[in-house]
Image (tube, rainbow, N blue to C red; front, side):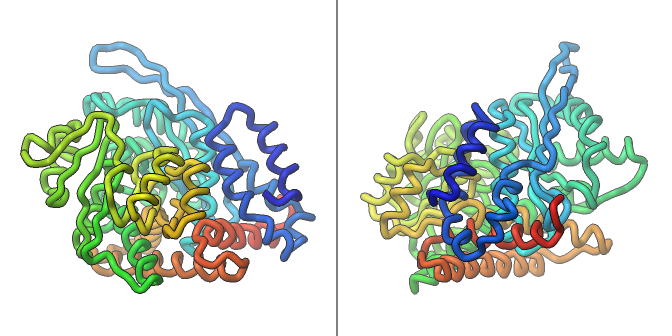
Length: 445
């Protein structure tokens, strides 16, 4: 890290003690900022980096709710509104037992740069709760969402903050949240949430967007190497929304995904993951991925297995933060992997990133490679604002163009700052520049 930034990072550490994920995310971005301050010293004078590292607003609240047996539960809700220099705050809600302030802040911080890279007028935020929707009935999830929105509603709006889904928050949860917002506010403000159902303001491709966008980015990475996905063997960690639709798009483009995973273990199918089977297990029945082998008898399941030890050409981490370690990166390098692109947020540890950047593997960080989800959320906002509805094909084409533009900007920025082919540095600097210029233009606020 540039010595000018060491004091900035030290202050971030002191002000956010115990928030390991947030500090990790800040360090990763600050490590790229040395060349920027050398070229634009006014950013240092006006403390633009310090201002970006401090959220504009942090909201923590109690969420009481009652289960089907009448037992009362108390969860904690969060919304960190990090930066609104480019537009209203925009970022998902995550419902998972691991959620705490550090995780929400790291996600919100990453969202600033990700949203800037899309070129859309949206700021960065994130929110959620330590509530676990797994194993809960629809009625229990509804009661929780209604209680959560009863507090959150006063902090959001289509011109203020527009949440969306994330881990544990899909169409079901967004529907309950939107219904409660409409009930409390007495207005049909369809642009206040994205990821809605198609029959009440949702956008076609939104479900597929993050996974599709990830693969469009990979397609551009390979094209830059005069290569393609055709015939490539891929592994995709996770079995949620991002992973499923990444698998779908890889298959459409001629690749073959041989492995995916969930929190229980890994499945390996040498013939290629069968999507209808996977979708039924995870999207309809909501069962552990082990059940895949009951239908596909030749497939192998390894409880708590390591997907990164499987030989592949392309690796797509789509599960959660810090899932791909230095040891895993070494395995991928040794086994001949040529591209690692992040479908999750910060899924690679600092040691893993260091090894990947030092190798011949093309490495794309999540803030660039998984920006398709939020980009399509912004497209949903456009449709809601104009009372319009676009076709799947039209929206998909716009998504592909956005991902190509992000890819090209990352490469061009890396070249400009003396690190050709370094997507991580390119993404950090390109995202930062857009936000920094806006902050500078607005004065000291």
